[in-house]
Image (cartoon, rainbow, N blue to C red):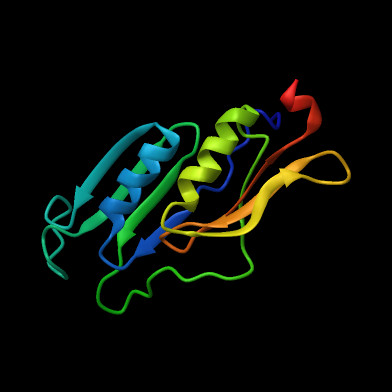
Length: 140
């Protein structure tokens, strides 16, 4: 199997009752198509019927999310970055960085580094940390 056809991990976030809002926001940032399934849709009776049992964003950036309930531990993370290095044109990456920083925290501004590449880190409003950047050739 070539690396172009290899499956890559897709983040699946268990969020504290905000899965729908988070995925809608990620769609605003990245584009793509959303799909939601509630607890009621899946016949689950272990939580409120309107909670999201499974949601997904499919597009240039793909994510899954669900509402944590009961004994499920909601998303918390340190020491992990979701990398979007070279994932789009530099202008788009700057737009994504700026959008993710709204309501979040810029940990390291998206800027050119001494070795020529540009990158930065932002923790978004949902606690997800993103590494966004590109190589000089990508900017041409």
